Amino acid sequence: MKPIGIYGGTFDPIHIGHLICAQVVLEKRNLEKIFFVPCKISPFKQNEKPTEDKHRLEMIKLSITNSPHFDFSDYEINNERVSYTIDTIKEFKKYYQNIELIIGYDNLVLFDKWKEPDKILELAKLIVMKRVNEIPTKGKHKYFDKAILVDTPTIEISSTEIRNRIKRRLTINYLVPEAVKEYIYNNKLYI
Image 1 (cartoon, rainbow, N blue to C red):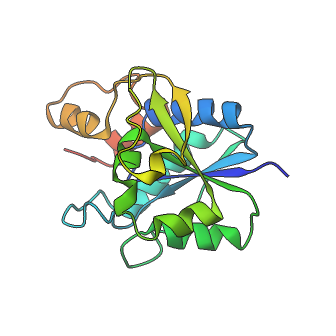
Image 2 (image 1 turned 135 degrees about the vertical axis):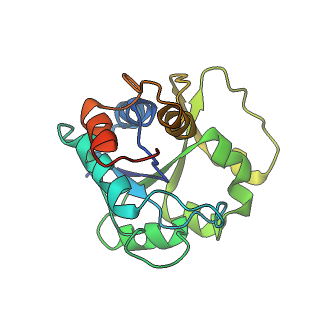
Image 3 (image 1 turned 180 degrees about the vertical axis):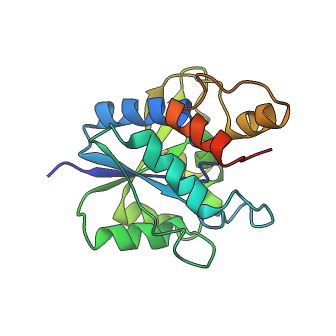
């Protein structure tokens, strides 16, 4: 069976950049499917409070409805603790043999500070989405050499920028799927 991908993050909100890059990784790595896993509490952002879990999860569901190779997991948001990737991978290992952990290049730079990075690499392949204009920095730490870099499009969209645009009453057309945009406005998120 083909490997599955785990793509974690805050997804506050999920946007077109997340989806396009995930599609590229799905194709280039020949994955069975990719699971979007919204975190409960990010280990590196423990003082930040994201939008309610139910909203972030619903936006993910809306954005992947017509994508048979995209799925979601509520494993992390159902736990009332800091979301550590190693715990999520151990949970997925109960059901899937071959797992590929998908992270952004910015997370590779911090990977040596993650909880049990060596154990993560025992259980999963580390797939790093690298924008074409990002220059790999070999030698920063040992995990750079263990990562599989996948060139992904450079899409200058961020969840922070989307939230800021909404606060400033600017359009978010084309930045998020239409169903997500409607959900944001209907639930008065980020105002």
